[in-house]
Length: 451
Image (cartoon, rainbow, N blue to C red; front, side):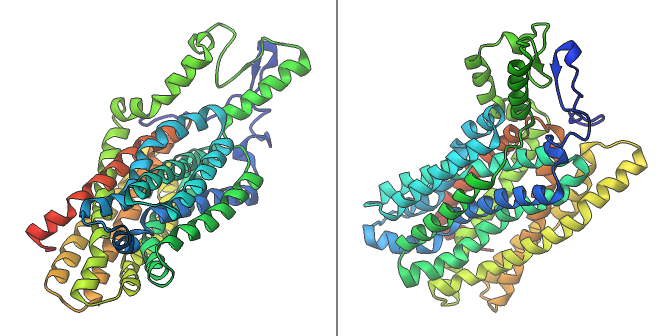
């Protein structure tokens, strides 16, 4: 939907007509009615894994110079690919994980993907060549992409629209803060313990969190839960004609006639369908992709700027990312405090909720993004005091957080049932831009300078 009435209001069970649905608006089996403590715990689990995955995307960037020395790499592009190859995995993984999570459930897909993520981190730590390292980084990105897409679905499963702003703040904290803290810690690990230990740390942290998700996570996908309930009632009541309120009807509609294989095929193309056909997803995804590409373009400069211009060591240069981190945290706080309040006020004024009500805050946050490019770029080129370019990174972090949270929540509100696929469409485009744009960095900055 692009506005107007809600699409996430759920029907009530009607066994007389063969329809299986929730046992009223207060059904405790409905994830929307889970106790608040349980909702917070489930969001904490997903958010923890969602921190590790983006953290892994950038943690290796300070240590790539040591890997290049060990493998005798002379090509700057190969070194860059060993970092951005992870993001190419982000382009591939959502094509499968998002539709599969909508068909088979969030829990099993997230658990399987996390196992895949941890397994190939071991491959990265033991990689014998730079080419093998690039391939393993790509595969870890594939596994690490699941949390970025299924997490949006979990938010839609657990919370109504008026509560999603705060939930998205918790969920996206890892997505936005992870890439900042990655280089900060990666520099210390790579310089003091060696670049191999960057990946062993990811194996340990990712393994622990993946085990927690496997044990304590709970299924939240409404469609899957209703399918399980329908199957159970068919057996208990001996009524094979019962159907789920989400999937099919007795009248033999199109969904009922589709074969399982055909239904899976349609789900797998859903992210592309939304990206190409939706007038909402395409412009939102394009805008976020541009910002994400700029973020990773900034990442590629920070270590070089503070090592070559200010003479910092590899481990200390990672501290320069704190400027972005402060901006991210400030943006998260402002968004968390303001988003749901603004939505509630606009809903009361208009007597109904529309997803477009979220977009007003985007304008405010967008004003901060170009400030960083002038501030950081020219202060670095003019070799001003080191604190000036660090502070100059903060407005970008502040603005990007507000834009990302607002637009991500807006798309989830528009497509609550297909939240994972809609999120996947945005993950694919922004990851593609984040992976490819930094490849132009060496020649672009050499030719133009930072300012």
